[in-house]
Image (cartoon, rainbow, N blue to C red; front, side):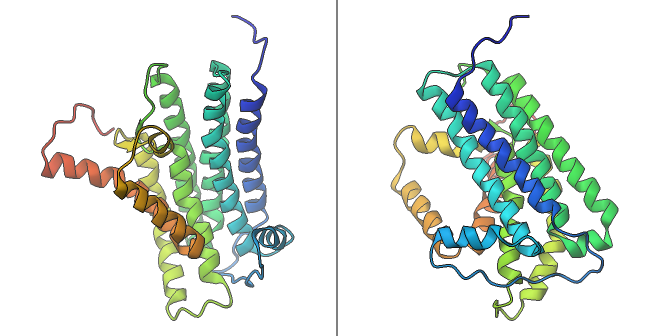
Length: 292
């Protein structure tokens, strides 16, 4: 066994940034108290004129469970930024290595496996109170599927792969599909939200989310193809429709991020199975690989 003598500093720092965000996402979620009733907590609206004020207002609150839930979700999204950049930084600096690939998977297991699974338990107080055993089992299953997904990716990925598509839902996208609901729940539970059916919508989402997490976990270990969004955006020319879709998504996140973020993430999760069924059942295209 050869000894590791050098380490690429810059890509490693980006990868560890991913891990730090995942770790603190767990720490922040751990501040949230275990529910003692089925009642859903509310949160005071954050008053901020710019992103810096928003961050200051958010991180100084240590006792507000709903804000801690949202902060944990945003930390997972911040980790996705580090995860998307570390590989590109390694290739740009010509410092790609097996060490970096293994470190990236270990960090992803924490950030996109354990952190969203733990957050799932904390952001559904009604479901957690009524079905505490079930929600922990679902969360553990999600984390297990994320680790299996990462291990399979390492075993099946080769240097000559174009990295334009994934076999199965990538773990960062799976984590985002859960973390987006943490942001949505804050929007729904703000004391200044005057939407007439907000309580009914909140209860319905809490009842649905753990079962949706099972579908997401199964999508990770499936063979359903998903596009590598970052690589496909950075390589080659895109159609005008792709450009309009990207602009629309960015504007939606800026204007109504509380609702747009989870909708975009869930849409990506559902995109793979819908396209697969369309190709198999409607277009009748042959597909050699099994779904599982």
